Amino acid sequence: MKAPPDIDPATAQSADVVHWLTNGTRDERFIDNIFAEMCVRLQQSGIPLKRATLHVLIQHPQWLGARILWSDGMRGAEIARVDHDVRERSEYIGSPGNEIHDGAAEVRENLERDPSQGRQHAVYDEMRAQGLTDYVAWPIYHTLGKRHFVTFATDRPGGFEPAHLDALQRLLPVLALVSEIRIKNRLARTLLETYVGSHAGELILAGATRRGSGTTVRAAIMICDLRDFTKISDNWPRDDVIDLLNDYFDAVSEPIARHGGEILKFMGDGLLAIFPLSQPQACANLLHAVSEARQAMTALNDRNGGNGRAPLNYGVGVHVGDVMYGNIGSRARLDFTVIGPAVNMASRLETLTKQVGKPVLLSRDFADLVKNEFELERVGEYPVRGFAEPIELFAYPG
Picture (cartoon, rainbow, N blue to C red):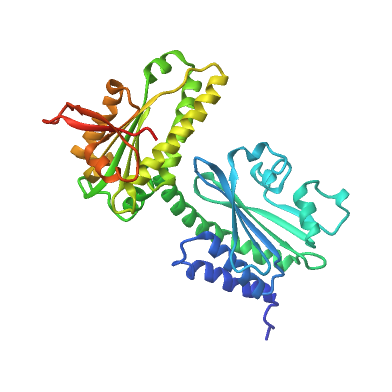
């Protein structure tokens, strides 16, 4: 009778980690939590793991990717965002990530040997300083040719044994599947937040995708438009126009988001934002955002003036009322936005800023809600296209 084959305990127990990754992570939404628990389970299986990282590329307007770091003693993992220009920095050039993204199937470094005999990069010096003895990095393959990578390091004298490496490599296909699902879920959420806003994105993810579906929301509505943009776009180089628009939208949008507003649409050189009245102090928050946007535009014009550019001017129309908030469009192409007379009024007020000569115009309905907190200037009554009676207008100089 033949004796059973020798099976390394770490390899056998790592099969339990594979099983857990496959079957035990279904209810966990975040890959950083899964990664941290996976590392703890690997330690418990007998693999002398001291440090591990997962590096993923993401589609985000501000970041190229993210690094998830776990080290011995941590219950969770740390997430650090990676800027788009990282590949031009010394921290990336010559790094394991650089090698993996250039096509390497494995990066292995013996950290116990003379540093002059190994790879030269600050990351290896940092790991030696932490007492680590061995390091390995492997690519993680997602669909459509996407390559991410994972790293493992130990402080065991002599480094990883072959059985440890075999056990870790057995995890890679399952880790790839598990991580891709979470990353794509996060990507879907990020793209929706980027293009339609956080609140609308949550509603869409929750299933609000049917044409005509929506709800009535009472909100303060703000429409902002850049002046003389047609002249600028006709006379400026294309790239300068794009940079100008981005700087202008940064100046106006960041205060809106900071004060609880939601930008629903960029319309050429304009934007539409709402501050739902379900939020405490929504109307006051809108005016605080306008004040900060004005300060940011002043700073932007000072910078542009140093380059010989004319100052940018803008108009803001503000109203309050009920709006229909939901899906509008064709059968195959929808827009999640707000419509209704209140939106039309805000748009007309923005147009009137040119005639009145005031950059920020408020309707009487909105002014009544903030007049005890803010100094407003009564401008008078003006006819508004599409509305039967003249509308009493107020300017906000703050």
